[in-house]
Amino acid sequence: MRIRSLGVIDDAVVELSPGFTAVTGETGAGKTMVVTSLGLLLGGRADPALVRIGAGKAVVEGRIALAAGASAVVRAEEAGAELDDGALLISRTVSAEGRSRAHLGGRSVPVGLLAELADELVAVHGQTDQQGLLKLSRQRQALDRYAGEAVSGPLAAYTEAYKRLRAVAVELDEIVTRARERAQEADLLRYGLDEIAAVEPRAGEDTELAEEAERLGHAEALAAAATAGHAALAGNPEDPEGIDASTLVAGAQRALEAVRAHDPALAALTDRIGEIGILLADVAGELAGYASDLDADPLRLAAVEERRAALTQLTRKYGEDIGAVLAWGEQGAARLTELDGDDERIGELAAERDALGAELGALAEELTKARTEAAERFAAAVTAELASLAMPHARVSFDIRQTEDPDGVEAGGRTVAYGPSGVDEVELLLAPHPGAPPRPIAKGASGGELSRVMLAVEVVFAGTDPVPTYLFDEVDAGVGGKAAVEIGRRLAKLARTAQVVVVTHLPQVAAFADRQLLVEKTNDGSVTRSGVKVLEGEDRVRELSRMLAGQENSEAARAHAEELLATARAED
Image (cartoon, rainbow, N blue to C red; front, top):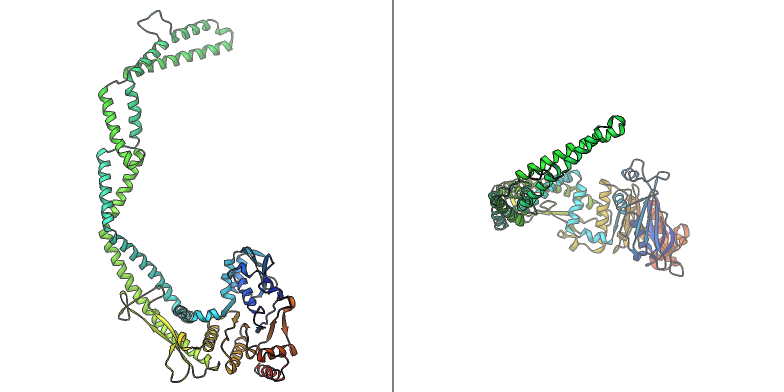
């Protein structure tokens, strides 16, 4: 990794060993920034406070070697990333303003994609993870992860049934608790539907009646206008001497007919005048028919206005026009059918709830059985690991229990509380020495013991669900002496099958590392490119001496450091 402008680090390169790398240095030197940098590369939260004071942005770049065909490679290539000699290049930039950008294999990608790849690439554990292990939910998740398909299969079916049961329960509760409101809604719908049915409106009827009312209200004026128009076009029988349009057009046609043979252009005009005459006659006839058919009956006008008033009552309540009123009626009828079917629906939902409850209980029993079987194997494996971590008499076990609840599901012949992950409460117990009763690790384990339990759990996981890299951030806190040596020895063993990176203060742990990196500040308080260096030979002895006694040149500390290194090399 190359780290620039992150925390106390100005510009540094961190080269990790394929096996076991220990990162050491004085408190406050910036060791944790190595963990933070890796977290950023793996999609961790970008905190602008991490950007070095005076810098505009922090940049972390990493090169991760991956096995060909690994699922992380496939997912990266799907996102458009390109490999560099089989390695994946990842870059993360965090600006002082809080903006964050991610690049994968030369392609800009969402930060969430890096988080997707993280689970397959690196397992990160620190002090906060130890505290997380104290939570019952995390202990159950750890057991489920160890159990694998034996739990994940029935758990998936259980989760699906649980979601459906919750949905059915919510719907049933709504129908039952809102019965009065729904009855009132049904009464209002019936009233409205009855009111519409009594009027029996037709689609578009309001528009038709408005036009008819307008016509009937001006019947006399319309008839007089039509009669006058007819007279102007076809003549008035009461005024034989009057001149009308038809007579004039006919006179023009006769005048042209006499000479049309002499000029085709004039013949064409004559024909057009003939067409005008025919059109005038048609319009005159229609005007005469319109005037005679026009009904000026005041009774019909009254009936139309009465009908319009009835339609207006509907549009005031149920829609802006009759079309909208009819649409409201259709929707209201469908809703009323739904409300009237509440009793039947309540029965259906109750039956489905009971069936789902029985199914949930059966699946919960299956989950409990699978967890119980896995717990015995898991506890035995962790106990065996603790023996190699200077806790030879410690015993780990699981307490898998259920809580009685009259509103729960029936499982194992009892009615017990249930949740989205089953009916089991899973608690990890530790008996640190013979004769000691098993107690929850939150109460029965010291800081050092908890660190070793955490490491033992992770080592067991490494055998069943391995990832390429494990990063431990001071999980050896509270440990010293022989226990520290055993932790170093166990981490070295884990490093034979995976890459292990440990940030540590313990020389007993660092001595077992294949590579030791020292993080140190310059005089101005920053970590520069030369501030992260690989320790070899005399430099490594000097750093281990400092870690042992706080004195780099102490002969006793140097002798002890050399002895630690010799012990570690003897076990390679």
